[in-house]
Amino acid sequence: MSSEKIVFPDGFLWGTATSSYQIEGAWQVDGKGESIWDRFAHTQGKIKNGDTGDVANDHYHRWPQDIALMQDLGLQAYRFSIAWPRILPAGRGQINQAGLDFYSRLVDGLLEANIRPFVTLYHWDLPQALQDEGGWAARSTAEAFVEYADVVSRYLGDRVQNWITHNEPWVVAYVAHAFGEHAPGMRDFATAVTTSHHVLLSHGWAVPVIRQNSPEAQVGITLNLSPSVAASPSAADYQVMRYHDGFFNRWFLDPLYGRHYPADMVAAYQAQGYLPNGLDFVRNGDLEAIAVHTDFLGINYYSRSINRDEVAADNLPPTVVKRDDVTEMGWEVYAPALFDLLSRLHFDYQPPKLYITENGCSYSDGPDGNGRIADTRRLKYLRDHFTQAHKAIQNGVPLDGYFVWSLMDNFEWAHGFSQRFGIVWVDYETQERLPKDSALWYKDVIAHNGF
Image (cartoon, rainbow, N blue to C red; front, side, top):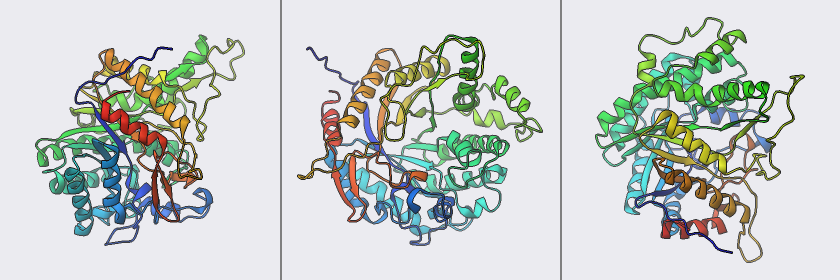
């Protein structure tokens, strides 16, 4: 059996990713304000097993140890998010210097370890004070975000050169405001659509502010995208596929790349009663602001979506079905869809640069008697997805880096601590960190820029 050696281009960036609420803990420390996730996690019945991020991985106190761990793995970059209520406890106005100082120490520690910081400004932990004023459904929250982005980029912009405004606007809008599964736990589709616009608008407004404060900055946004596939060649399945692609992918991609909101989706939402007053939340200049030039697009990819019209009487038999190979989240493992997604983004939208800002899988393999964690399924998952990413680069896609989700097992939102995405095992009782086999393999990939 022959095995081909895969080598990535010189300068390709290898990293991992985390987010503030999922790892930091210290939820009431050093002047931090309450976030919507603090409130949501403390609301009975919202999180599996009643888990909260109050302590999580205690990264707020253990960050030097975590940087040493990253350094040992040879990581070249680390994507982390800043907790807005640590910086502006009320969402705007009074600055909490202790919060800024924490991230300043973290950035300095990363740079000393020769690890490039990628800062995400918003990974879902909105200050509760802003939620009380209407949250993302209110246009004023987009204005508050710009103030927050200004404060952070002014303070860290001399050292941080890679900025991501938002993580997964689709999740912010729909999982939190239409499906009720994330903070603030609303179930109103019309509010979710309005939210999606205000999140994108806040991105558009913040980009020039970040650039002004951090002249060398590379600025982008991260979207979670899911390639849409029709279950059969039927017109009915293609119609479902197009709707899913519009709902999940095009609603965010199109306005970011100057194409406004997709007309077919606007018509569909109006027909479904989700836009009772049309796009009344879109004001003059908004779409131009959202389409601001960005230096890169971040992609979070986990799984494809197979679309089937279950009610069409004359539908064809399915030719594409969900594979049995699924993660513990129930997500299908299908690496070739990553190649399809990267190619589509390059040819349809032509972002100047792409990063995979998250990709990974949940498997709960734990330590054996010798402390070894043989997470062979994760190792295979990463190898297969890296292979597809390499194939996309060979196809001309300007993919510049890959951030594995996640550095460590952590608080997985509504699933609490029941799902483990880390390449490093965390014992939440003792806070011990233990690299899994996938981490040791990844270390070797980074060292050789391939496998």
